[in-house]
Length: 531
Image 1 (cartoon, rainbow, N blue to C red):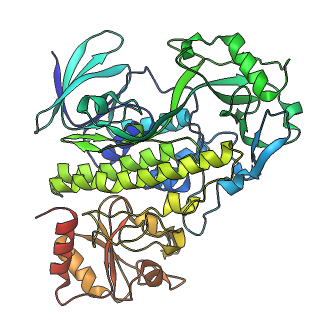
Image 2: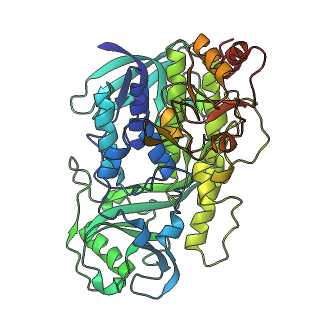
């Protein structure tokens, strides 16, 4: 059997797996991705990415490309979220979509981006390949064996049936909520499980009449069944989702006539003209795609040299557009840690912090998505949410061995204006360099970074002594026009803040000790498991 080697093998080529390949390739890791489908799906699926996810792609140099590729329905501020029996009926619930996607310009340099998932996957895949990732479609992971030193996987070409072996140092499972890798490892899941089985399709129709002048961003309807949803794709094309019972039907059973019938029921116009049900998978001609809406959390995110990311690790309802975003941020968290271990810059225990950090985040994000779903689909009073949506996407907090102190004892998420302590995302703060403005976030992403105040010369010398990249804020290099950087980051003028490659604060100090170089060595050693 043909044999080859790579450093990291990724199974699953949707947005999370592709993002993992992108982030790893950016760090110079040799990465191979296999995906059994022949290409990215044409179906849009997730329709929007939140500002934190845009920040993550910004750090990889993709923000401008992604913004340029956003859909024709990108102006969320003008659109409306409604719930009603049908589109043609009176509304039971209505809110401007801007309330669902709050402006966060004070907390982040990035905006919401309405980009269809299929287009996002194409952009990410193209960039990952440019950086050296080996992305293989029509290739299925058949089996794998973790021998403690690495993983040997057998993959099969879906077109020829030919098999080959790939030897990798680590395997990333990005193979969805029904992950075969997770099941093979015997990793269980906790939570309600499957909440609903749905089918999704894309259709074209003129809905001018039933829309009654409303600029619909997302509609929840009780016909033909509660849980039916519809959202614009572009112009007169619409994405339609409705529940079905897999015990009595398969998604493959639904023909065009059935699709037209359920679409008409949801719109509330019995003779509505539906011009086209679009093909989603060209290879098979499939027009209707079946999915599970689930809420579950894997019991663990790692077994040996295998890691779970995205839906393989956690599944949540689509309300709030949190599922794909959480998965992309999993990949971002894991990538820098794998890269650091692979190049010898960190010890293997650093990889344990992936589960410590991301599993907690996924747990409270699932709870938030569940509450949001009940708010939108139930007539009962909604559950009170302990934190805001802004806190969920920008304020989540890590307690792990990669943060000092390891346990700050704080809440799971903070409002964006309260972040800055170890374990939280480093705050966005506007600086100037050579007369041009930049965000502090633009200083992070390639390795650990030390930020010091204007009186932090001792820290700067110490960082130079150990090869740690450092910047002085409020000096000749980076001007601080507002003079508030130290306050925002919670230190004094002679203080220092150590920021991880993923943009999270790892440690800070108010002032330098007698031997700052020794202090920095000790801090980095503990965070990176350097012994």
